[in-house]
Length: 212
Image (tube, rainbow, N blue to C red; front, side, top):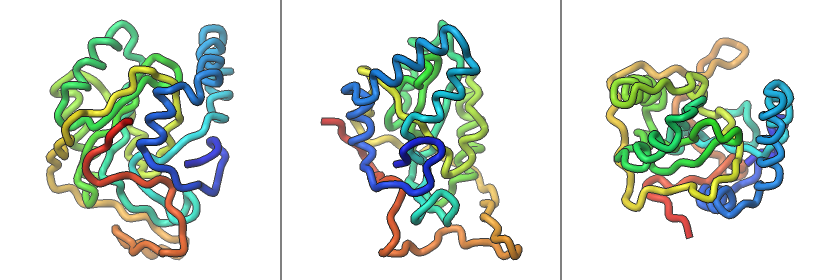
């Protein structure tokens, strides 16, 4: 987990603890202040939001956000600007067999979701998710979540939820995975071996999450 959008070195944090904190109101004052700012000035909101803590839902990084990453088995899905559809979409997402958990975005205008995927097929799963959400719900997901280390800001949502049964990974067609490129042009391995001396961004279980 990172202190804010400018943080470089993360600390280990379990996802269940983040979700509990979002639901219990750990960041309530900060988030409600941001929502009040948004009502007056969207640009100011966008600037101030960067000081919220954040975590990488889809990947882990060894030591910092620029080092090789491995998939957590979840794809971060951002559904923005839902407006009057928000409550209906939330109900749909709670019932979706592939959505493991979700919560209201800091702006309260959209939802942040954890979509269960094959951890070895991040890019293919992203493309499958784009098609799935459009075909099934008529919703466009934020394309920036293709980045495995895309920062997800914390929020405040007393109705944050976790699917009571383990979510089913979203089927994904075969798509060549893109590998990060080192400055000398050498591609990094798709699934680097973890260094036991390095610390991950966030610890995520591979199957089911429970909120206490």
